[in-house]
Length: 298
Image (cartoon, rainbow, N blue to C red; front, side, top):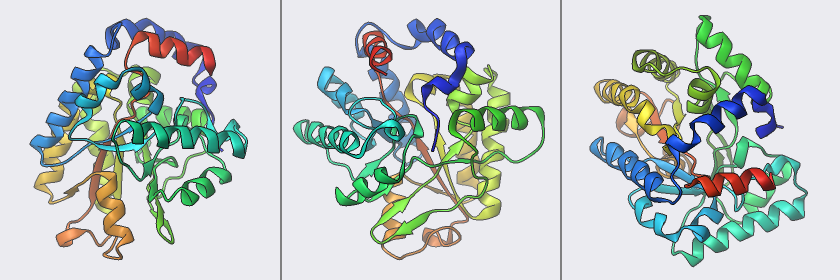
């Protein structure tokens, strides 16, 4: 069971509150522009980002839907609350509300990522019963090495999410697949460890890609739209690297479809490509008001 937001500690919460005004506007326009830049960046590399969206955001700010065009979408709950701490009925109600909201706004998805990467066994039973194709809520630690950044990042990841796995694998159960999300993510690196320099972030993300190449695996990066501008140089470098090495740049929906169709998986990617990379970014708030209301109800 993963830990939820309280595991970030007082320092992490204070740090995020300090930077919120720079990342969020009073309305959705600033975040909308960040999303559009993220999608345009990935389009340049002939790929789609996967953006798991907390569905209540769509109800509060339907105008943001136009900014999401061109992205592969997944559900990120209706409200940004820990599924691990909910009963089965509460999870079902939240999940069904999210599905309904996506439908009302003309959006279709068969993917899911839990808020706070926080699940329990009932979560996966519910996802399968609602005919979701994939989940990407299970964290795995994907930064090899024993330097200070790796050690600090692993300690923080374990504190926030419980002890994380270090082996990349996609678990298939019938017509449903688990696609683990890689740690450290942007929140751990930027807000947790205070890293800002492009060269350092590039080194970290590059090392994560190297691990995926060696294992012929699937690296699922997590870069929230609110921090995309801080990661753009590092992502450009890793996209160049993956392109040069012949890696497959794909959305989570594409990877899930490939594996569930029985065409392959780790070590057997399309066209004999050596490994796969997906860039994802959860969208759980688009304005300062959204963030404030989420804190009050969590």
